[in-house]
Length: 227
Image 1 (tube, rainbow, N blue to C red):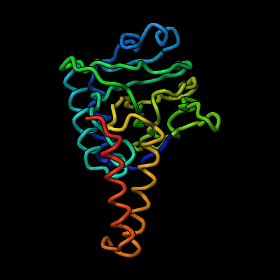
Image 2: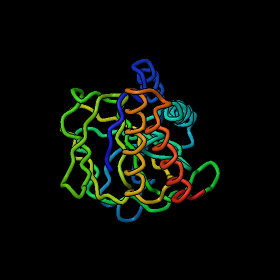
Image 3: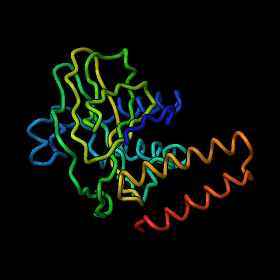
């Protein structure tokens, strides 16, 4: 399931984050890439242990914790602290698949990468090229979202960032381990949760159909969750 989540950050939050990024140091993005990815990665990143990166991460994680659509789609167990990259003219990230296991730098804790996320900080008109292209069962999906919006997709997907030809593409990228390992199961639970919310909005949260479906939803989570 590939899902775009609007307005994860407000305009003021995006502006504040961009100010922090302008003060942060940047380094070659290859420093955090695996052996295969390093061969096709050409961008800059903010080192994860800098004060700016840590403050930026806190802002994003707080916003995600309050975003009902994100929680419904991801059912997160552990989220890797957000990282930040920048692509200028001629820079790109060739087709690759994300590492299956990531390590949280601050704790050494390992997590399985079930879902990959890109949160955009540049407006689409600020740069040419730079589309995120994700390979899905239904073909290639190109993603280029407004600042503050985020895309969420399975980490098993082959994907790439096309070359930037004008301007700068700035974004946050990170991963999470979901309580629900299977993308198929997560998709079913998301669809079911959205249906429950639609019924509740139309007929009230105490509608018997909404109540019955809510019971099914939670019982499926009990059956499938890994805690």
